[in-house]
Length: 119
Image 1 (cartoon, helix red, strand yellow):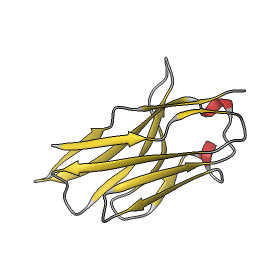
Image 2 (cartoon, helix red, strand yellow):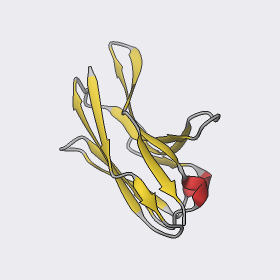
Image 3 (cartoon, helix red, strand yellow):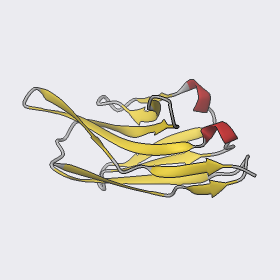
């Protein structure tokens, strides 16, 4: 099993910044994808930013230029630096780790951390 522990959410004013962290532990293979998704009530969970299994990054168009994903491979930790936050960034942010073990892909999710952007 894989455990993901997120931290760093909170309330911030428009234009402000937050940094999310997600630490993974458990049965993790050497090649995995890891990143951030978000969800608001009544909507599907959407990708925010992620590292692919090949090590490249993907960003949602809505966050490009404002959010930066980074990682510490030794700690199996991924970070999301969020700058110039907007009210529409308000959501529950979920950390995700995906990996293939014995040919089977599995996704693991954190418990979610609330980000609220409001004045």
